[in-house]
Image 1 (spheres, rainbow, N blue to C red):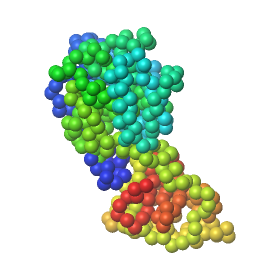
Image 2: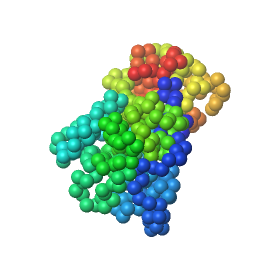
Image 3: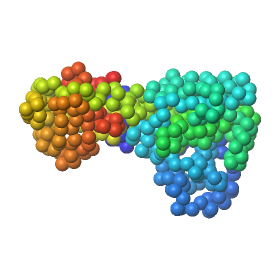
Image 4: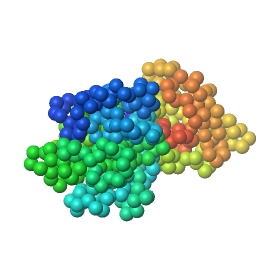
Length: 403
Ligand SMILES: [Zn+2]
């Protein structure tokens, strides 16, 4: 997964999805192994959603067939009639939820302690989210996500409700392929499996946990989904640990890091286009520009750490619109070669409005081929891949830009 996240050393630590080390029973699994085993034999390997879940790394014995739904790892329900984004791809694109505003409706018939816990959990998420915002709404019809007691659910498709007293919560979770959040977080006021009872702190943390699923986060202490590079591989304090309903507290440092990587400023699609104001409304001013570093921001771009010298030597005008004399990348290891003039492998338009360059795969740099907008950020040069997935930032600083 190395190539997916190289934003900066700030991001070097981990959140989701380390291998499972917990030996405890999962508080959140409500149904017995026998039932799971029976149901497994009914699952067709040709089922697209089932195959998708297996493809994400879930094991067959973690997937339970509930008829119209699959229940995964105890507390995540997937609707067979919906199409889900592959978490891998979502993370590559930073697009787990792409709607900027996620409307959340909190059922008013819950006790105040649960309503307060839900509001506090939303607040804690909003304190960390940057590219998306959770909004609480009073109009249920406008909700993207509902938070309610399992016993208040009226949709009879959810035949697995109410939850057992050993299950704290469950979601119909994970963003769908159109970038919408998971739609339900069911809370169980009758949960009684914690020694010492259910405190307000536990309520808040468990709502945080369920909202996390609906925003695309898997269990930190399990082996499925994809580890967010840079976050800890083991994080006992993660609020996204599974089977830990009685011990959850608040976001760990690793959680916060993972949230910033996935939902930090500029991480959702389109963010980088805005951040670097592309397409630019005028051409690139003439000049000889030289840089010692190329930083890849965002996801799935090329690794150009071996480029120690780049030159953009541009003197175009309307009579000579192709005067990009040099756009050279010089490497310290000869990969793919010591000296590459990108303009030999590209078509470009730098003189007029909307300056752009298309680099073909013959340049030899992995993942460099693509369509880019160009802009200057001060003296620095930035190429933003046109989908907004990543940007190449040429500067004379070893530090990645912080904007
Ligand atoms: Zn969970």
